[in-house]
Length: 259
Image (cartoon, rainbow, N blue to C red):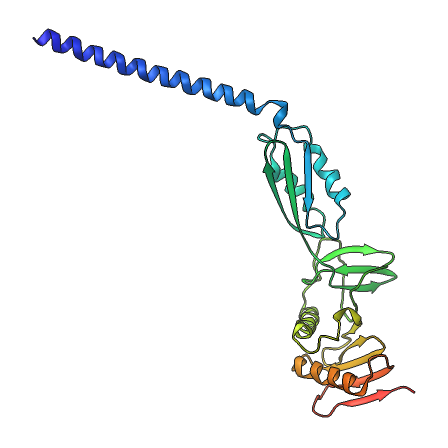
């Protein structure tokens, strides 16, 4: 009786071992098969789609991405590609995704030019956060204002303006000006008509709207000052006039129109 139980126990153990061995062999075969399938040319990268780029050309981005063409879509490390694309200062972030069997999609998030500074005949183009995006000899078709009064110091592309106390306040003034103009002052007034922002001193700020100089004074009560200035422009039909509107003290504005 005891011998039979022992034999039955050994038989059960043998069957379990055989079953386990078969499972292991099957898993190995599946892994090998999948590995072979994944390495088929069918899964080589053949198509690169580039999305959301308005400033950086698709050709420039593709020239970086083409290094992965023909490589296996599963085994290609895309984070290295992201780092290379982000070296372009106009590009803030990049998302790269795989779409089987042979396509990668590159989604770009760009930094927009926000203002420029004319520095010794060169045009230094900055983002909203005062990051130097580019230095150009010409600024054709660049719809951002020139800023006068910032101290650039020794700056290179990809760096931010040195935020000493004076520069920090001036950059904040530029951002505040645009933020307040984004409020519903009047749909007929377009921020793209601002061509010049002058901040020679923090208490003597102004900007050029078409041919009108709008004097704002201190960086305070900007929305009230802008509302008053554009109210005067609209009511008096000064849209295309030459002169200035001083709303440093917006309750008692001063207006001078030539002609």
